[in-house]
Length: 370
Image (cartoon, rainbow, N blue to C red; front, side):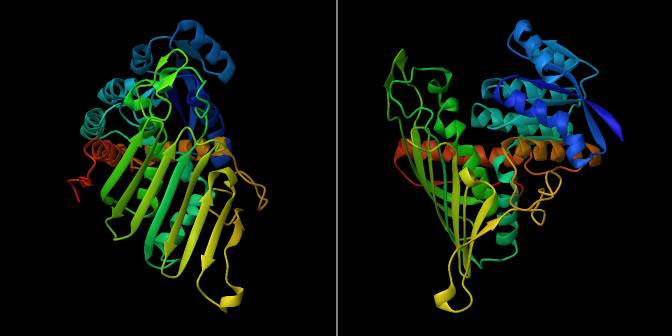
């Protein structure tokens, strides 16, 4: 067992989640690498010091460059707004430090491509923070589909819908400014990542993107509120995805439904400890979806709890993510999703925005290595 010094850039929503995860992962998963909370960075020295005291870091700074260059910081977690992701990641890779970066990787497709190039030329471990696909239920769904448990997949429907901007009287903020902070930059990547994980590459798509509330108290909204994609997967399955931050009543509407030739699966993150499974077998009168409550028999559940149906939560997804990051560093073997997997998501976002602009179907570029 050995220690590794962790530096986290960003102390807000995701900065706290990653800090808690790094503090807990060693005990939960009994990892060989044990994180040492070395340094946290925030937008000012004052806020950084506050986060240091709250989360248990040894030191704090208001300058991310100081964190990256500090020799005691051996691995970096980027939990800032995406406009800073590229520059911070490049600096870390230049010093040979592994990076776990929150999604989406870059503020633009070009930045994401730059980040992949920097990661791969350095040969350093890199991961993107897509946490929702790591629930025991979604990991089990992925396994079922890959093993042919519902037959050949014919159709996929996914959504990521929330209502934090449903009220038109909510004032403008950083979330309402710039394409990277809109629904296609913020929420869509999570469900697109799920679609790629569950079904595989997207071959072509057509999309519609819109701003529902263009004016809000304090100014003009410069990005999108909701979007929808119709797509064709490389495996031949049809697909449809919907994303919204104005979906009244939806709090964490990360949900999907998959139809196959011998069964179907349904999942909703608002009930994250359950998976609904239909199998086309037995007498017709006895068929129907059955609710499977996650438990120790499902992926990554047992380290948290020995009781079936007791459930895991949001923070546990980040702890699983931290375990994967540490395992990749320990073994030197990439763990999904890497920066290249994050780039695949951003290529779809880019194609969808271009489709909405041109009002036409778009082919999605495949990975040149395939």
